Structures are given as structure tokens and as C-alpha cells.
Length: 315
Image (tube, one colour):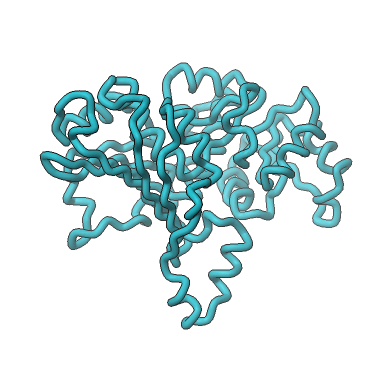
């Protein structure tokens, strides 16, 4: 039996992690009393008692919790506070076998962001293969359900009148081009420059699309869309939670439309290449609360505990 404490269990990500762990016979979830959930002494007591602590807190609160915990506590941090920090291992095992091994032996693991995962897992293989230069100037579009904004955004969307809901249907944000996920995207994709990132939030609960447009002329050598799909398939062969589709996977479209919610409830990420002879659209579809957040945390927890990373997760 492994004891796990989720600091911030009442938040959107914390609740999702709890749901994935509560039925497991090998996990004992430690919970702080509601009346003491902001009491540092109570939280520290549970961190010290647990085999592993998962932080589901805002960035500054996560930094404070790490300082409170000291040097003996094993931590997965679901905030963005430590994702490019030298002392933390980035919790994306699909990056490489070395990354998976590093997670398995780590004390401090930073859970990856929802948007960055799709971007990094699409772009990094092209950089590593020499098809795309590290100096490439890229753009990325992201669409997420409103659960990606956390508890306050969920409550706001779910209490709208029908008229208000119409005006909040799909909205673009981070228009200053300073989204907090950008350092993580640049760093782990191995790019010299941050991409231009244009995220949108839709009036639906969960589900995510990431799309990266590429001109064929942007690539260092002429390749087809089928070759790009094959490169991704070879890179991620054997990965339990990454499904690489053939070029132009028409079977995934509904009258020409791509639904962002089709992988909801799973830890599966679908990687796709659309386009034509001259232009490509690299695409990732996944659950922003699954592979994008809580599912990824459970996957990292399994690795850190020396377990099958698929345990308790639906592909």
C-alpha cells in the first residue's frame, strides 16, 4: 500500500486525480480535514506521512508548499512553477526512454502543461530528425474546454444564462503573446525561439486540440505528409498513450470537422498530420483533464513508484 497526499484535492485537477486513484487497492489517499486544508502544519504532517505528494495548487502556492516540505518529500507538481527548473524532472515520459527513466528515479517531477504536451510531442521529433531547424519560427493554435481554466472558470461558465453563454461561446485569449506555457514549449521542443501561441477556450467542459501549421518550404528537406506521419509513428512506436494516425485520417472527421472531445475520459493522445503537397497541419487531440493534466500525473506517479505506467489509466 502506497500513501499519497494531494495538496489541493478540491480543485479541478485534484478531483480528477482523486477519481483515478480512489478505487485502486494499492493506493491509500491521505486527506486533510476541510477546516485545516490551509493550515501549513496539517499539510506538512501529511506530506511527511505520505510516500508521495501531488501538488494541485496555483504557482506561488506550489512554490511555498515545496519550501514547506523540505528535502525528504517526493513531489509531483501539477502547477507551472517548476517545469523548466533545473532541479526538477519534466514529467513527459514519451519524450525519450531517458526521460522515462529520469522520472522513475526522481524525487521532484513537474507535471507537464496541457497545451505544451501536444506541441512538444509533435515538434520535438522533427527537430531531432533534422527536418525542422531549432531556429524555426513556429505558430501554434490551441482549443480547450473551459475546465482548463480551473475551478473559477468552470463555475463561471456553468452559471451563465443562455444569453451569456452565447457571448462566451469561443474566445481567444493571451493576446499579448505571453502565455505562461511558452517557456516550457520552447525549452522541451528544443527551439531557439518561443512560438507564437494563440489559445482559445470553448463553451464546453473538456477536450483539447493543438494545431501547428507548417509550409513544406519551412522544412530542411522536401518530405510528404505521409512521411511526417511515418516519422511520428516510428518515434512513438510502442507508446501506450500515443496513437499516431496515417496522413489525412478522414475516418476521424465528422462531415469534415474534427471534434476536440473524442478522446475525453482517456489518457490517449492522437497525433495527426493533415494538409496537402505544400502545407501541413500537425494536430494533437486529447483530454485536457486526462493526458493534459490528471492522467499525466497518475502516469508519472506510477513510474515514480516503480509500477506499470498504465495502471489505473484508460488508453
